[in-house]
Image (cartoon, rainbow, N blue to C red; front, side, top):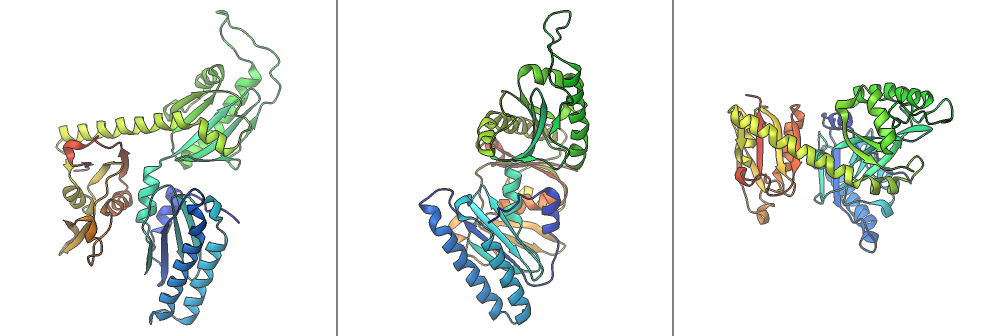
Length: 372
């Protein structure tokens, strides 16, 4: 069995593109731990059986199309390992393809058949877990890892690891007696920095620098990417480690990244307020997002809003009727309109930052810096 890949921004953009009918989206809340997780595979199979039935009963879907989509849904389920389900599972299938994603947040149990995939849950959850890079420095090599949330994996396709051309033969002190370096080591770091250039050009992500303090110090002297270095973790012995061990070690650095994002988001809102480009509250922000005016959306982490988007001539997303959570079954209602709001902002090249609860108490828990 193989595990689903985590989506990149490029993949999310591709998933949002229209497709020939029928494009099937299946979302399922799952469990990380046994014994609750033992029922997830059964629940997934039952949901896919229901999707197959809907396809068979749909007059707009030919038998050949239904069979092709069903085959892709089955292939997606067969490729998943229930022992590694997260908090939620999302499966997409069309007559030509299937994709599946494990997510670290709750999703509703739904089947949607349309000309587009239901991406808003995936987009919103991915926005909550900002991707990052991890550069691991050691005496003889530099390794690159990619992370998102608490999931990390080593990248061995971008020219890493970078290996020193020679062993560390000596510690050459500087005149002040405190500088630790050799030319082999510096050359290795400079080569790693050059390879990091291409990685950051493709995906401009924050970088966590990991290594002993002396390693980090020398790297900072040679790097051309100082602005990308968002956090440091002074620890050695991680040149050869498992993803689980690396994830545990990175917990303090992830907290530092989240705190930096929160500070940046709040500064952006303060500047927007001063420049009279500020909007607060889900209804006003929804309207601005529908007009493509939101440059930065800041949302409290646990905010969930049940609402119904109302079509208005010339402004499809201009109005929003707020509902009670128990009214989620009302025709046209969305159980959590925040997911759609996040997708709308990202689709218009805006940025989304999730912040701790109570950070936006004076803004009804959601606010935006506007383009105009």
